[in-house]
Image (cartoon, protein in one colour):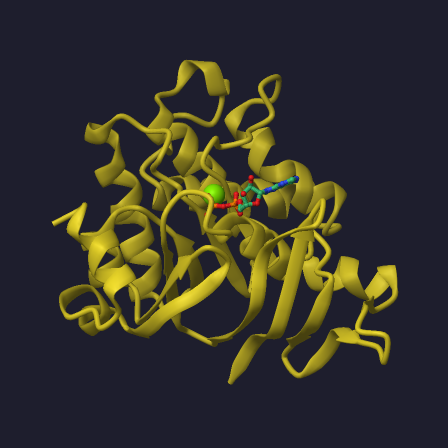
Length: 252
Ligand code: ADP
Ligand code: MG
């Protein structure tokens, strides 16, 4: 089943088109990798997909429900705010810089939204948070504050926090880019485990070997367009387009 479908998406900032007629879909249980040079529009595409940023034109459907369509004048029209808010709650987000609440303990970082946004009881939220902390190998850190943790530990807390809301799709925007190289492995391992549990994920990454191993499908973006896409192994091992080859040559 298609969870998310984006068709003919366009987005400009101050007249500069950064997303140009992009279409994509995310299937249930699929891991979609997004690669491409800095400034190619990857983060903007992810922000549009997760409804954090408004598109100018195009269509977005979630499980077949239309969230955005384009009117006759070519302008994107969004569903009512209540629908947008509900659909956004199906998305989990993990960013490069962890974005934890600095003045909350690890446990409270994870339980805050389940209690205050999703209406879980404190007992439910705490039990679930402890289960997630065990899954992330952080069972002894629930009382720690973010500044007391390594970057890799903070990122695992932010993954636990995203999972606590039981998202349908988990989106990662360069989850290892802010980490020292020796800490990237622990994050990639957690994401691999989620993939083996068939968590639906969209992952922007510069870790090409990881993308090849963990993603089912990869999009290569450059200058606001999808230059090439396909099966992860095939795209990384045997790119067809010159621009893709040039980009991948920097990594291998
Ligand atoms: P990537 O994630 O691939 O590095 P981005 O989506 O961050 O690319 O950026 C794509 C282009 O859009 C860049 O030229 C960037 O400067 C521009 N851009 C992104 N966000 C904004 C914004 N909020 N306002 C103006 N320009 C932006
Ligand atoms: Mg980016």
